[in-house]
Image 1 (cartoon, rainbow, N blue to C red):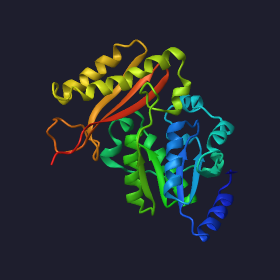
Image 2: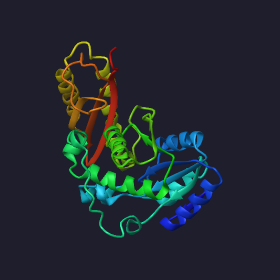
Image 3: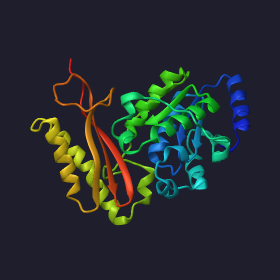
Length: 284
């Protein structure tokens, strides 16, 4: 496995690999890797001839500088974790390599970016689009693999690819959970022991809520989830919404003919965690 830090170097390597007839699979990450990331890498290895993983903490998608500073970084640990996997090439640039000049591009994703994460983290998805579009231009992958934990981000990236007509297939991959149900996240390693112990209440509450759809309206269930989580002194819910899985707009009734996903963001101490679960498939 090779670690590359410069754009010219990775382009040269990938051009040679394409001449060999290899398809390129790409897993963009911000490092602090865990088994959720590894599941993406292994799936990429099954579907493509060469797997590239980027490790880059993108400053333009953080609207909170303290959050950016807290974000865990350990390149050597990440490389060690990737070594026995399907990953063959790691792209780990410095910020100046990706942004030699400020990226002033402004993306418009309409209502997709005006709810949930977009509402509470202004500018976040514009930063995501900046870095992912730049990485796609550098790597030029045939397929790119993203986890469903960042459900809204996945919708934004699909829309960006459509708008910019980028020739890449986006592969959506299932959430990987810890043994106790907590969605795997790089931020989990920042939790104190007591916060980690209580963070499992988030997923446990969502699993319980799935079984209550017959006895509550959508609005009642949203209120129940928020109240249930906020009863825990270590947790504070930022939002919980049950939305149309395509438009991301809140659903008002279980009878609406769409697939429904419950999306949540919770502050566990100083650490912000997100999760989502399917709450109903589209009716015929």
